[in-house]
Length: 257
Ligand code: ADP
Image (cartoon, rainbow, N blue to C red; front, side, top):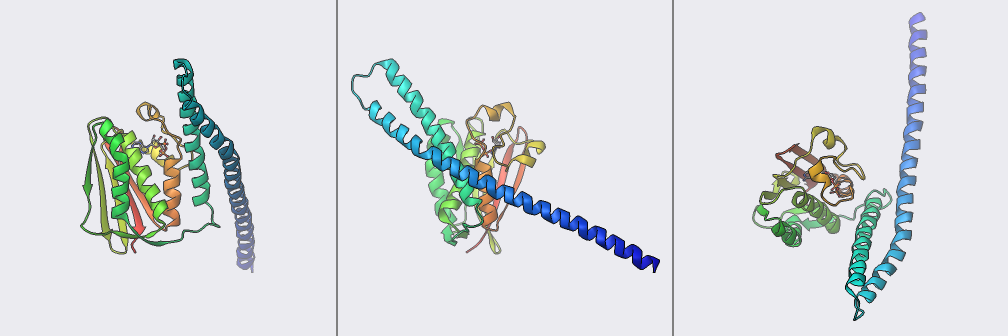
C-alpha cells in the first residue's frame, strides 16, 4: 500500500509538472504568433511611405540642372531608402514564411533552373571580387517539391552569403544531387568560416557574427532565418560544416518531386 501511495504521489507530481510545462509552451507559442503579427503589421505600415519616398527621390533625380551637392544628397537618400526597402521586404517575407496559416503550395520545381538563375544574378557581384563559381550538377532536371519562389530565395540567400563572406580570388562550389527521396543543394565557400559558437545562433533572426571580417559586409541578419524557415516548412533540413578561416559548406535537403 505504501508503494502504491508513493507511485501515485509521483504520478500526480509528474502530471502537474507536465501541465505547467504545457501551459508555458502554449504561452510561448502565443507570444511568437503575436511577435510575427507585430513584425508584419509594422513592416506593412513602413512600406507604403517608403515607396512614396522612393518615387519622389526618383522624380527629383531626373530634374535637370541640379548642383553636385544636391545630386549627391539625393543619391545618399536613395541608397538609404533602398536599404530600408530591403530590410522591410525581408521582414515581410520572414513573417510570411513563418506563418502557420500560410502553408506552402507545393509543385515540382527544377532546382537546376533555380540554381542557373541565381548564378546569373550573382555573377556580377562574384566577378567584382574575382571569385570563381564552380558548378557540380548532374545532367537534366533535378526536381524538388515546393514553392519555386521560396526555393529560389533559399538558393539566392546562400549564394549571396558565400559571395559576401569569401575574400577576393577564391572559389565557391555549388552543387545539386539526387539522394533517394531527397535532393541536396550544396553551397560551399572557401571564405571566412563560422565559429562553433556562432553556428549555434546562425539561423535566428537578426543574428550577425562578431567576426570583424564578416561585420564589415552589409547585412541584416535575416537571410539565414528566412532560409531555415523556408526549408523547415518544406519538411527539409540544413546541414552546416564550417571552420573559421577555412570556409563553410551548407547542404540543404529537400523532398524530391
Ligand atoms: P546577413 O548576411 O544579412 O548578415 P544572414 O542571416 O544571411 O544575414 O547571415 C547571418 C550571419 O552569418 C552573417 O552576418 C555572417 O556573419 C554569417 N554567415 C552567413 N553565411 C556565411 C558564410 N557563407 N560564411 C561566413 N559567414 C557567414
